[in-house]
Length: 110
Length: 189
Image (cartoon, each protein chain N blue to C red):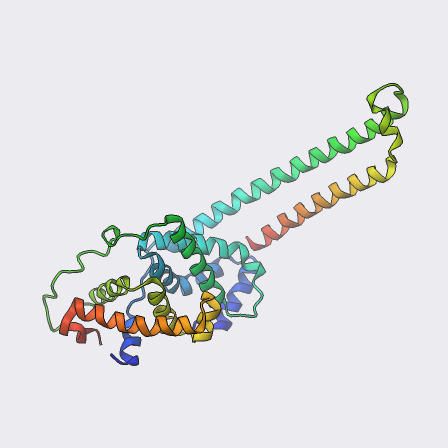
């Protein structure tokens, strides 16, 4: 068998997908995309809620640590408050921003 | 190789949000992708499931495609890697009896004429008897018309291994076809 004959035979070996392959695929992609979209939205809400609770908690904790004298919270009054608050707030904001960007990129490819 | 520019234009459209362009992209590449997956998995149903997963993956990763290499090279690499992973997952190779290739050993009744679908069945049955890497190398070289360098890039196999696989693949395919068809092999040529 020469090269040309082999090429001819191999060209005949191509298998074909089932008839509804593309439609099934597109349905799966759409379903997949919808699930992803919902999970992104849920994640953004969840992270925002956690951020809000964390920031509020931190503010409350710092305020409490100034007034309560004889508790285990006393050591907190020794920690510099503002830098920690700024770092935590910025990290959370960056996190939310990252999620929003992911969500936007996801909606562009849809 | 498929038209590189056509692929690029379709990818740009998909990235701009045109889902129907992806449908077209799939249409252009689905059969060759299935043939490659079939070389490795040797089962049509499993291969089709694998390439469906591949195309879903590709759809989500298309925005990261860098337009430096051709889309087909990128796609075939994903198809081959996913198929090998699926094969590893299944551990044991799939038995020939499990496949739905039909009654392949039925005698050829009309000696003067062999239907196209029968030709395909016999060729695929012969290819199934080959080692996975040999069948894959033959399909990439003759069906996808890729160069050895491109095959090297896609499979991460060494150049020497690809050459050996091609050489052995040619010989073994010839042997298997002669075993199956005898002199009727001429109907394929």
